[in-house]
Image (tube, rainbow, N blue to C red; front, side):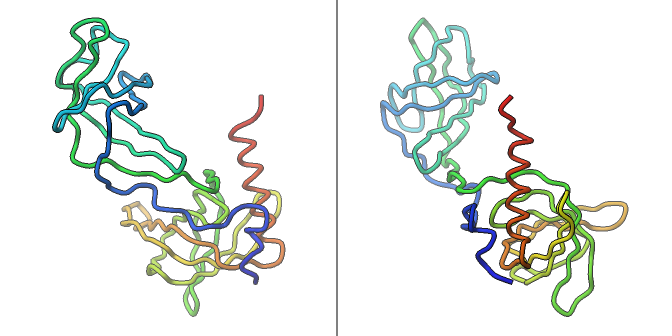
Length: 223
């Protein structure tokens, strides 16, 4: 199997972690996306004092003291996000809102490849081990998220047969990148794995690429 086929038409770079804790770095004049009562507002930071900030807000009677508000600060590489508690709501038109900031924010980097939800049957075989059925729950150009009753160690190499819709069974080599705690079910523990694709039988990479594109069109149609 080759290691490049799946990346010929879609970037195969490994996905970055979805988030990490970072120090909050804000300055007066920054524009934040603010979500309150389920609605989004673009707001400007009017002032920062200690662990509080005042932001402009169009409302005059909300949000009120004690409410939890979501914020995002975007840039070309990704965005930082955090929750802040309202300590003073608007007192007059244009007064703004004062919020207490948390100690840390989370940082998310924009993905360079799409990920789509799936429900595809797979068969997993560790080298020298038994074969186990599983499900491919989501798919990106570089890997997938798999559920199975079989336990694999982080870093192990596994052969995966994928039943690609409208194509048939194709073989892919994967590496286990991370393992989540198993969840209990009536048929025993189910393990979840984040994986990276490392090799493909001829035609497998192209078939997975096409399926990924088909799913994107199905999920986000033009009309």
